[in-house]
Length: 218
Length: 119
Image (cartoon, rainbow over the protein chains, first blue to last red):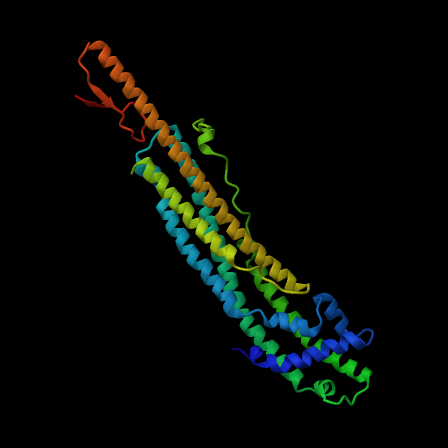
């Protein structure tokens, strides 16, 4: 359980209050929160909840799954090697079979490569999440202790709607700016791996046996 | 290794890939609400994840097709061998009067005449 999870029970009430105040009273024209809301498409409480739902172990688990599959794919690749030769099969059909099998093996190697790259990316994202969540927790923690938080959460509201609105906008902008950095950091990690993690799925050639004129259609 | 063994190995490999594909497909998409960098990141990861199980799906189907083709080729070799053996038997019977000798199809991968003589 990281700091962000531990803070959630305390921050949820405040962020709900921030969202409802902004929804009811809005914020001053030209306030930085408008740009942040427009870019992220979410009010501060929703944006924080969404970021907090991204957990490092989930990404690390997916990376581990891809790595396990990569090992199995390597075993499959070995099991396919030299099969035609082992069977003693020769001739035109055997050559066509071997060509087709070689194509499959190349694509299998590519799947291994892409899986490995995606796993490395997810591992790095999990590491990034660890530190990004820590930074976000510190930001939320500082918000909880702020004067604006007191203004918003006092049991009998002492402040005028305009003051409450300003407090909500200040807290919202404080949190949203960190949430924005949170996602931008993740996107940068992705972009470092993108070229190798995404290649076109295999477009394997037609039936080599058919090309060799050996396929008998029923 | 016979051609049937070869086909069986290919089928096994196809099954392994299908299992891996199903494992990946069972995972939910990377989800966020809203837009911007969050939505971009989730969309990129989801696309990469889907591309990986599409790759495995495509490879699994190719291996299944290959296994089916190997089985078909084996059947054709068997049929060709049996036909050649029958022709040899007929030729021997014709040349030796009532004395009969059996030629059996060898059924090997080479697909030649490959008949074994059984006195």
